Image (cartoon, rainbow, N blue to C red; front, side):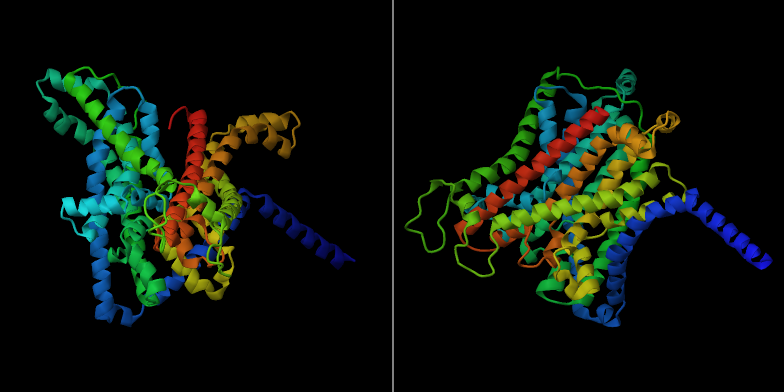
Length: 569
């Protein structure tokens, strides 16, 4: 009897200890991290180890052909990214001055117009420039400027990069400019400095961190560009991203593809670390914001505002409007119908989206591709929120554990989407035939955006409100319903919209792992653009127009939610 009582006492003691562990803050925080870390371990770090395993092969390093391909791809990637960044700053820096220093009619609309391309899928951007520079326009440019087709394609790639990255310079540098008070420049003028010396010795040193941060971010996006280069230039312009795709699918050499993926990952991680350090310097220099914008007064200022406004309006509006116009206009005949076609306005391209013209058993209607995209986007939203909420709750009040784990959540942003697709192929083999791997890949890309959107909202909830509700007798669910949910509802909708938009436009990873029977809208657009004939081209323009409309509606919703929450972007 005594022994039984002792055993019971020991058991009760262990139960108490176990319950204390369960309710301890350390265990509860670890429980919050369980699902996100398990997801990343299985679908990101495990595929990454597979890629690293293939990379450490002596034949990969010693094969002269592999070394030649690697050197050429790396050199061209840096070359096009550098040129794109320089051209982006050539347009972005004057634009930042325009928005931060001057008030003019249509300023808010023009600012929103410059922001739309950044959120557009790269497939839509490529299709927009493809439609703007149609066959006849391209032929005329080749004759007038005596250009080679490859040169024109390269110029289109650079222009497309400027198109969707200019807003980065406008936002980062423009915000820094708007925080510089007029007294600094006025003091320099009083001391005898002209405009050029004021910019050189006063303004530019103060803007150096924001300029560097914007340059690093633009360079990183250009460095990892895939859809624009593949659709506008093809395999002739083999960056690291394009070369990984070619060696993974078209000319199989998985060892070389893995080696190129590691090189890509190393460089993007370096750029990400440099950007994080630089943007932290920008944020530490941030002062209370006040408006320094004013209407243009002198003739030079009025000419500057009018010229740049016209240039920006044309540069950002024409490619966007060319898609719907081109999707409703017949400019060339279809194959075998050169004598029968009627040129001009038509809705045939939209009607053909519902028709299996060739009667193929393996044909998937474009409308079904849209349904697939919407279904994958819906699953991505659910997965991203289910994984993002626990991590955001933990990061809202960070401890040493959160500070250690936080960088691992951002690693998918520094990885190539093509590399993710390659990792899935190497890790899961025939299992990727399941369409469920597509939203998993999309979730890996969307998860950092969701966490970064939810985290500030969760951190802003005052703990005293929760304590007051509990004191008044509210249950935990009632506290969440009356205190947390009203504050988190807008942030949740914004995060869901981010995930939805990212999933709709994702192209790189999907191109490697998608099955022919489960195409998405970007994959369908790519297939139509790669096939000859005016009908295929018109359907690509119609699909791109629908995708642009869906994405634009999502962007407007995000902007509205941000405006309501913070008052300004």
